[in-house]
Each structure stands twice: as C-alpha cells, then as structure tokens.
Image (cartoon, rainbow, N blue to C red; front, side, top):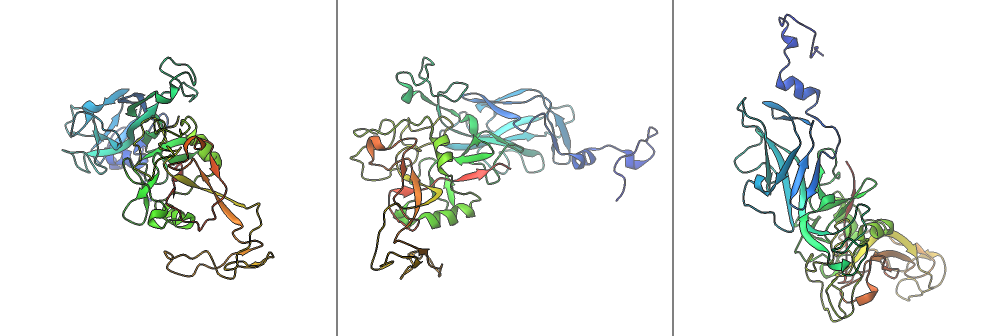
Length: 380
C-alpha cells in the first residue's frame, strides 16, 4: 500500500497532491446527518447545509441549505400523484459554477446529463398525504385531533416519510416505500406483479391475490425476490394507524362497501391513507402477515388428516397447482391447524374493515381472490 497523503509544504512530493480523485477515495460523501433531504412542504424538499458530495471524478461540492421544487424537474413543470422521483446533484464542469440540483423520473441520470456528471443523492414518492400533527395524530382542517371531518383531510404532496437518501433508505429498492420507524420500511401500496417474478408497490395497479393463484407461501417467495418480507401484526397496526374504518354503504373512506364485487386498483379511494402514508391498509384486499398461529377449533378431514392425533397429513396440503416441485408435508394434531393472520379487511367487509382488523381463519396454503400482500424491509 502506498501512502495516499503526506505533509509536504514544498509540494515537491506528488503523493501530497490533494485532488478530487484522492478526496473521493477518502469519502465520497460526508453529511451532518443521514436524513440530509427532507420534505419541507407539500411540493418542496430541503437539502441540508454542510454536506460534502463528490460527483464522478471531477468535482466535490459543499452544499448550502437549498430548497428543491418542481422547478428543478428535468422534464415537466409539476409532480404527478403516484410517481417516484429521484434527486441528483450535477456538475457543469465549469470551475466558476456551483452544483445544480435536478429532479427526475429517470432512475439512472436526468435528461441532459450523464452518469459521469450527475449523482443520485436521494428521492421521494409523490402521492396522498394525510394531515397529521407533530405526533402523527390525524387532525381535521382546523387541527383538531380526530376532529369532525378528519377522514377527508388528505391532500396531494411529497409523502414525508417516503423521502430517502444514500444514508437513510431501505436495503431493497426504495421506490414506493415509507419509513415506519425502528429501522423498518413499508410499501405504500398493496403489491402488484412486477413482471419479473417479484412484486412492486405501485399506484393504480390491481393488487395480486388468489386471482393469480397466490397464497402465503408464494407471496413470501416473491417478496424475497424483491428483497422484502411480510410485515407482522404489530407492524400493520403501526402503518395502518390513521386509516379511516370502512363503511357498509359507501367507498368514501376505504374500498369496503358491501356491494363491491372486486378489488379495483390501488389508490382509487383518496381518503384511504394512513398517518405514515400507506394506502389501502384498510379494505380492498386482506393483507397476509408474517404471524403464524394454531387454530382453536379441532377439525378433521378425511382427505388430509382424518384422525385427531399427531401425525403427518395423509395428503400434503403444502403443494398446490402452482408449486412446481415437492415441498414436504405438515405434521400436526388436527387438520388445518396452522393459520397465518390476515389484516385490514377485504373489498366488501364494510364497517368490519379497519386499522386493527384481523382474520385468524386462513391456513398458509389458502388461495382466495380477496387476499393480497404488502412488503416490508429493514433499513440499510
């Protein structure tokens, strides 16, 4: 290993030349805090003062407190609901010019720039935002906690907890996620097919369910492909908090009217958003959770487990038509003993759907058109 820097006041030792490339190898980004970008308004971000960021091998910039708005877009003049945006720092390569900040829908580099003169430093989701106080308590237009009309105190804007940076983000891709707290990120939307055997959190999509043959096992496998896992019931109660309960006769606050006959698409009900920004946590489709329990009832089934006693099932229920290989059997005392929890409520559960609603009936191999999933991920 050669010495990177030496103390050479005469500048005769070339090892002492402090250039951009050497600075970048020491640390290509130094920030006062990991959350150096934050939502400072419905349509603006603020970048903290005092960040030192290297862009390619050409420039290192020290930031000042900077407000970033739709005026920084590379294309267009306004943010769109349901879109994920990326924030870039760009270097014009002109010594006399400061850095520029560009917001783009492009995840590689913004229009007019390239990989060598721009660097992605964060991003955010623009969507539905519930009005809350400083303690994440839902408030109405007058600021009263759960005051009259609080359910409809929802507007379009940068989802505050969706803002991510290079130091504050999930281990998986950050698109369509919000920070729940305690090192956990949660998908904003019920998951739909990403076309690559994984899942995505996206606005305006039909959530995957048993309609596509999905059960607890197949959702678990697809979530793993996307670098995510299922949340547990405590996670659900936290991310669903602030979501209005369902109604029997209307879809005003959630997709739950008892006359509904299908799942619809994510985000179609404006009021169906939680305090942290999760959409459709109540209604539309039930959400599989990571919690497994055993049933209280004692059931027998002549096809699977005909006698009440410990033993292997006569026929394994763990492999269904969508499973391409043998996956073993289940050793249990009763038929259908193992149960995986569901949360939130389905599209026609009316007033029974809510932010703590839970279903203790389905077994993990259960396939139903009204059951979907949402992903969770740990912080980087």
